[in-house]
Image (cartoon, rainbow, N blue to C red; front, side):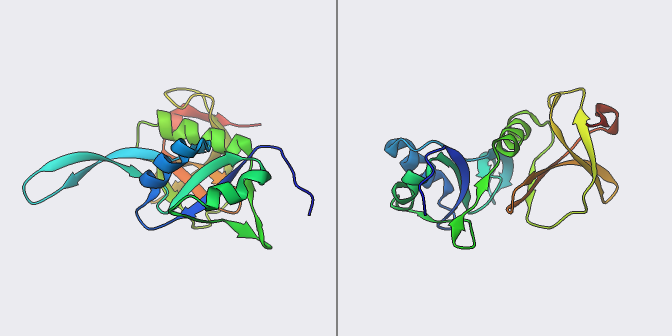
Length: 169
C-alpha cells in the first residue's frame, strides 16, 4: 500500500478514562490532536464541583499523515485507530471543524451518540453562538437538535432554538 503523506483526521481508541492523559502525552510527542471536553457539574456526598469531561468517551482525534500511525499507537494509552477494512478511517476536515465549532460555541451541552439517527433536513444556523454551522436538523423527544455526523464514527448533537436555523444548501 502506498503511503499518503496528506494530513488527515483520525479517531483513536484510548484506554478507559485515559483521554486527558493521552492528550498530555500527544502534546509531549508533538502529535496534533483534539480532545473535545465540556464542563459539567458533578455531585459528591460533601460538595458539588465543576469538572471537564470528554464528550466522546474513550476516543481522541489526531490530525496526522499516514507515516505517523506507528508514532501515535506507541503512545501509552493510545490503543488503536478506528478501522474499516483493516485501514484507519479518515474523518473529513469539514466534519471535524463543525464538531470543534459546536463544542467550543454551543450554549447547550453537546452529546455524542453512535446511534444512527434518521437523516434530517440540511440546515445552517443563522443566529447565536453557532452562527454559520451547517448540519442536519432532527427532532429528539420534542427538542430540535443539530446533528454533526462524523464519517463512520457517530454524531455530535446539541439543542438550538428553531428560530436560529434556516434551510441549508
